[in-house]
Image (cartoon, rainbow, N blue to C red; front, side, top):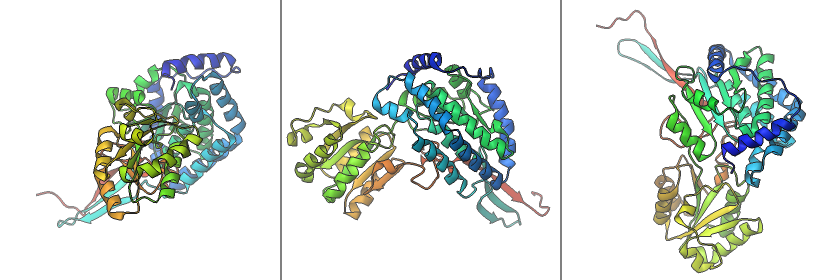
Length: 437
């Protein structure tokens, strides 16, 4: 994957090829955050129907702007010399633009999370207390190559009554601006403040630092990108952060697995889209079945261009597999590379995951329910699958409409972050004249 500095150089090349555009606003990120905070007050008090109308209007604007969005994306692609997996994340197609639009409509169809009474009770003194979901306020989203993140993040924030401050990667600058324009059109057409969706005016890296230190202006930061970005955000942020550092996901094929199912799941978990954080990076397979099943799985994946890094036990079965080092097993490849390890039962699989995993997503393939439950209880990851591909770790697949990211921390939200996870709450206390003795 290219470094951010490389991406800036690529973008400079693209800017020389781009048609003349309006100069971006000279506003700083703090200025934009001030505007977003004012807009957030209006958005938080808007009705569910108004916010849904904005999402439907934004979906229409995305479809109408599809030619311009694809033209902008072509400029970004022309500037990129990244590998195939990175280019896949950067690339927009008519189908992907349509998927963004449908995603906004799916979000609009979700129940309104704002104002939901989460709990309610009465005290002996007659006070009635209820816990009510409210918008967070202003959410800063820092993302890298995937332009569609801007639409997903804006849609989820609008639905949950939050303003959003976007800073896309320099490698996707043209695409991000075009998508942002469509989102603002939706807000404007619905009579809501377009300042509720803001975007960094240019590719200056200073904007990231400004967002991370905007305490009092930005209420929550969500980074979407590689490990270096996330670690920087977690290290430097002066506002709360919701994030995951890596998607080092494992699929464990237990000795009681159906072989055909295991082959199908592993192939999909690794090769459906190798550049997403839910892609399996390590296959763990029980020694009891490895001599029969492992060669079949390897052949399935190799046919689609996958290469391998294998431990000593796997290489005893298949000596031609390249040697896998400790560093390999700790690597999120985001490419057509799979680590392979042979384990002796579920405990050894859990030990391996505890050592190398990133608490993102793990899967077990087995027909033994007791083993599956033991595995699911034994991992600390935000998401665990039983007889399903790790690539289902996605807000859309969970019924969230979309996701703004994956959270692997222990507090507030875990797994795909949807509209409910973008709310906080307040306590409402209703009395009839009570005073405290």
